[in-house]
Length: 214
Image 1 (cartoon, rainbow, N blue to C red):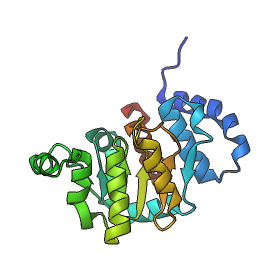
Image 2 (cartoon, rainbow, N blue to C red; image 1 turned 90 degrees about the vertical axis):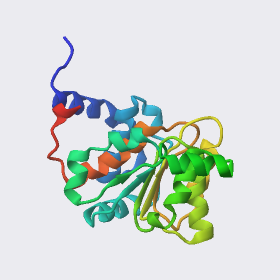
Image 3 (cartoon, one colour; image 1 turned 60 degrees about the horizontal axis):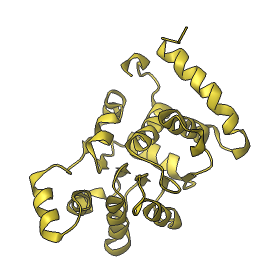
């Protein structure tokens, strides 16, 4: 007989995940973040490749509590974040990848739409949360904005997936220490991982969500 109760399913999943985190010397909050990423991916292979800036969780929590907005590269991230929990803190989630002005700008500049969207966001990223789950070019652009235009997001959750540029973009993110970050090494990642990271920290602040929403 398969399990049908959402809370029981989640609790059993976390029990299965726990041994794979035992040797990593994680704090309780880090363990919760790692567990939710692994739960979302169904892949315990994420355990050794997650990379966290030491202030990443605290910085994300502080940003959420003051009503920070989230800027993302794809609609899948925007739609996956627990809006019921997120809106309690007063922020909004922005994604411009499908906007006409972004398409026109990308075509004119010869860049990807995700990259164009981040360039158009520009100074709006200051002190906000950036969550990139799909496009390496979007992450490269955010890092350029940090480096060349002194724009400082509160935190960058950068987990683009793929074989072209993803590993390099994430390595570049992890190589800097000025901006708190959450990322994973190599080619793995994706929108579900970005969503899992955001939701994990949201649930640290407010775990009154209804699991039957899933």
